[in-house]
Length: 436
Ligand code: NAD
Image 1 (cartoon, rainbow, N blue to C red):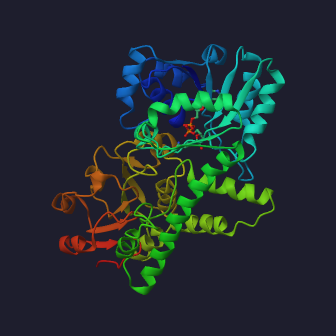
Image 2 (image 1 turned 45 degrees about the horizontal axis):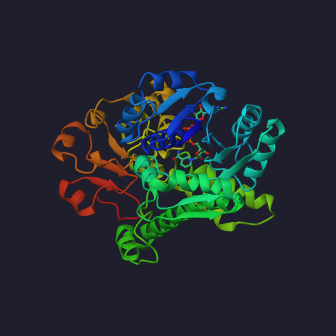
Image 3 (image 1 turned 120 degrees about the vertical axis):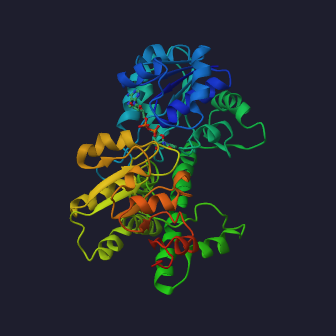
């Protein structure tokens, strides 16, 4: 099939590359000229494990191409994916300006029947809006389908190639048939393609992300209570996660969720509820809990240093909002670093993939170390913000030689308490006793 993907970010590039891998002819379109130039020169602008192998193969074999020209990109395409940003607007609702702009542009360019697919996360009713905007300029038949994307950054290629399920919202049999054929190679193990109407598909994506955010925030609240009640949140996680009704995943306590999806999607769903005059109480609590949780370590750090961080050097391990990505959008690390700087601390950071992105935001306000150990040199404390596997089994002997104090504030519960007692560290974590 001939496909076009409009928007070549985390979702668009993975979508385009993976559909090229299943034999389709794909053109990715982006307005960012520098990004397209890089892609045309074989440079992948994001870090996503496994993407390079597929990208190199499919560009080399001519199935995957990039352009800034929309008309050229959609020429002959049977399916046109919209993988455009839907950032929060001023009132918290999803801003549809990127989507509707492309919808306006697409109308007059359509030359034959095409299925236009909303892959972006968009509020209920967007497919109808996109249809209206395209129809203003279109002279031919087309369908607009909601096909939300559930990939996780860090494992996006695997998630895309072997999705737990594919959700397709459309009332059109013609569009259904086209997308069924397109997705067939990805669901050969029998994972379902679930058809529904457009509005339900749009809501499914928000319900999924909001539910996961609830799960995380619930566990963070349990952790906060554990600290007061003298219980260990990790034991509780094991105790409840083995219940198949609850499940093991998304039960890790920490310094809150971040990233480009959960914060904005929870906020957008809350806004949708408000628009429909529904008081969605859980969502309000989740946002409140998460925003407090993000800065949870800071009072601990400050209290440890008797309220004065001036002149202290703090090493930070982990900047990305989660491991295996370079994405720092809404990453708790950034907020925490800014706080430390405001308190007069010096900050030295290390992250395996996200350093360049942070450099673009914080510039020379902080120091960037070449290795995890180099970040510790002469630091008064280590703060862990992202649970990269690299940080899990460090050489404590080496760390002792570099750090001024054997002191760790762990926002992701990377270490066991017994282990910390053994190596003689003062260790603050989330929802567990402090090791002194
Ligand atoms: P992104 O910011 O990484 O990429 C969006 C791309 O669209 C950018 O490259 C931008 O230059 C391009 N763009 C903007 N306007 C354009 C235009 N007029 N024409 C062509 N290109 C244009 O965003 P993303 O993370 O890929 O997310 C895209 C959508 O997918 C969002 O709605 C997001 O909520 C959703 N989503 C994201 C993830 C994720 O993990 N990142 C997962 C599922 C769903």
